[in-house]
Image (tube, rainbow, N blue to C red):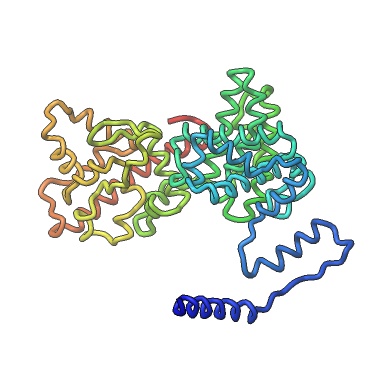
Length: 422
C-alpha cells in the first residue's frame, strides 16, 4: 500500500509542478468589442501554439444562427450517403468534415461574388447563403455532381486528381448546368464547356499564382457564357473570347515538352498536375489490362499499379534513373500483370507473357496497349539488342517511343481541352 501511495504522490507532485510552473496567458477584451474582432484576437493569440482551422471559426459563426442545426452534422450526413466522399476526402471523419466544409465555403464565396479566401468564410453573405437550407443543399448537390463528372473523366479518387482548384468552380456552376438541363442540346453544350474548362485547369499554368483571384474571374466569365449559351452556336469561340483560362496566354503543353528526355516529366506516382493529367487522359479509351483485358473502372482502379513500359532492368544501363521514370513510360495495369514483367524489350516480354494463351491474337494485344494511348509499334526494339551491350540503340529506341507516345498524348490533351471526348 505504501508503495502505491508513494507512486501516487510522486506522480501528483510532478503534474502539480508542471502546472504551477507554466505561464497561462490571457487577453482582456474591452466590453464593447464585436464578435468578429473577438474571433480575430482569439485566432491571433492561439495560432502560434495550435492549428486553428478557418472552417472551425466559420462553423462557430454558422451554428449560432441556425437554431442548433450543426454544419458538421449536415456534412456528416451528406458524406454517409455519397459514394465519392471517402475516395476524395478520406475515411477519417474528423479530417474529412473540415475538408468538405472548406470546399463548401469556397463554393459559397464564388456564388456570393467573392474570392474564396479565408477572410470571406465568415462574411455575412457567405454564412447567410449556407444558413439557407435550400442553397446549402444545392451546393452539396453540386459537389456530388462534380465527383460524378470527374468519374466520367476517369478520375475516381483524390490520388489521381491533377488539381483541386477547379473543384471549387464546377460545383458553383452547377445551378447553371441544372438550368440548362431542360434542353438536351443545351446540356450537351454546357457539359462540353465544363469539360474544356476542367482540362485547361489541369494542364495550363493559369492557377500556379494568385489562384483564388483567377478562379473567381474564370468562374464569373464562365457563368456569363453558360447563361447565354442558348444563343451561342459556337461555345468554344465564346469561351475563347470571354474566359481568361481559354486565352492564348494560357498555353497547352507543347508536344516536344512532353517527350523531353533530358528534363523528363515526373512519374504519375508524384503529386504533379501534368503527370497526373497525362495518366488520367491515358484511361479515357478504356485502359484495358494487358493480361486480363479488363477495362479500367471505379471498382478496379484501386488494384492497378504504375508499370514501366520499357522495364527498368532493360533500360537502366542506357538512361539516367529520372529518365527511366519518365511519365510517358508508365501505364496502369493490374498487380498480377505488373509482377510478371521481365527485363526484356517491351514487345518481347508482352508476347512471351501471352504465349500460353493461343487464342489471344496480336491484334487484340495491340488493342489493349492502344487503349492506354500507347503506340504499339513504337515499343519495338531491334532483335538481338542487349541491355548492356547496346546502350545507345536502346536509348534511341526509348527516345523514339517517348516521341511517338507524346504525339498521341498531345492529340488527346488538345481534344479534351476543347471539351471533346476521346
